[in-house]
Length: 165
Image (cartoon, rainbow, N blue to C red; front, side, top):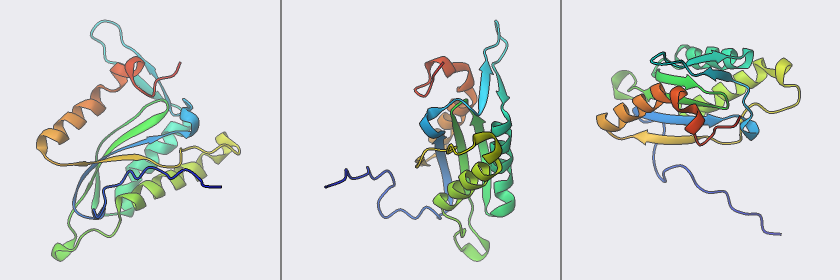
């Protein structure tokens, strides 16, 4: 029996440990809304993202990544009810060497640690879907558009492609 081939989502021949900025989206398993809730503000009030205990654990792991990988910086992030958006920047190492972690390493560690630390709340259910979406940020305009997308994502939750009630 031939199994369907998984769609290749990474750029061929691209070094994901090279210095640069990356936009990453990671969804929960079955897109369950277990990370946060969003309350839309009235009038001009901004929406409020309230993290669940699992969402707080995920945030802790995101914020601890630069301690684990000194050449990494988390530039921006948002924890939505069923997915996370991050802008991750890998900087050049001392003497021009590229940083040691790949983007895959960074995502794998964040997913693994947050899953392990959330196990008591999850039971046998997985926390994350199997893969993640990434986009290599190519220039300043791309970076600014992604930054704005992350910042405005909670206000547009009901229109989000991952939205569920």
